[in-house]
Image 1 (cartoon, rainbow, N blue to C red):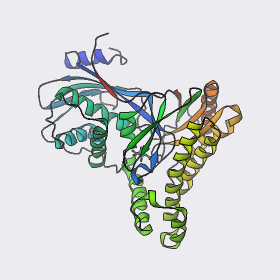
Image 2 (cartoon, rainbow, N blue to C red):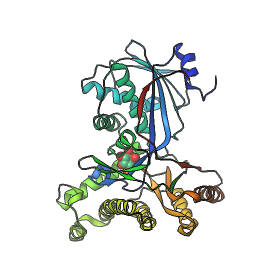
Image 3 (tube, helix red, strand yellow):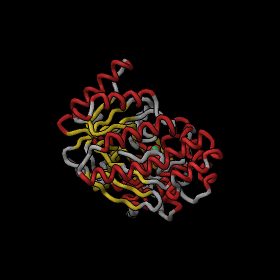
Image 4 (tube, rainbow, N blue to C red):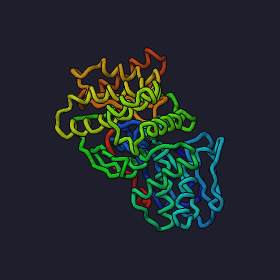
Length: 389
Ligand code: GLA
């Protein structure tokens, strides 16, 4: 049995053919980092690296899963009758069981199924493998129960699962990007009302992702601390929403905020502005300002929000050394940080050269290869009846 053949794996494991094929993309975020849980604007895009699930109803109350995502190649199962947060080597099941619990609370009568999950999307790389896993799980349960959630409701249930089961107090950017992404477009999401505006990416622009393979774990507390600091800052600022805060509001409260909350706040309000500048640049066709927008975004995450790491900083510097005169458009860390990946926009004919440059520079510095690849902007998650090829 070859690992590249999930349908044969399904047959071998469950002695049956799948009924559904479900696919959810990962995402990059072009700008708008750590502001989705603060009413900000964000600008992610779905990519052509994904997580796939083959599914067949099994008419029991058990969900049985075989997957390449974790070391154990035996099927793992759990009952739908008592869904609770998992820990230890079953922690990853929170992204599945948590979604089912939220669907149950939403009124859906859950049904058991068998599944094989495979992925060419790296996990823990800041590319939203968690939201992809949540979304394929929701779509699988929808398929076997004959229900259909709208993308916003599905994203909300997936977010609740991540918050309550996986314990990460994240915003909804990833779930919306995975569930609503559009080919060749980034999504400008207003996280105050969750409205989504597709922003076309010019056809001569390519995306290079460089995964440091420094594993981030957003459940480990630093992410939560950032969110709590910002909530404390907002209450000192005495406003309802970060969208109502100006530079002069910040200056007025500098003494009360203190040095740390001042830096965190500066990141938030400057990052929200950068997203709108990015939209203007992309729509105007003059991409020149993007180099500065992305560089300033990275520096703000590095110095004021403190969620970068030396490997990410190195890759961003290396991209700017490659230079705009050689085709770079802009580069920054992407996703939650503390490891993970950088995203670079580059003229299409310079993409291979940038990819090699980043890879070589990184290997010289850290004595190991990063995972660099060129990504296309893809469509959102979909569920289709399984057809034997
Ligand atoms: C993670 C979270 C998102 C978002 C980003 C940072 O990906 O899941 O909600 O906060 O970090 O922008």
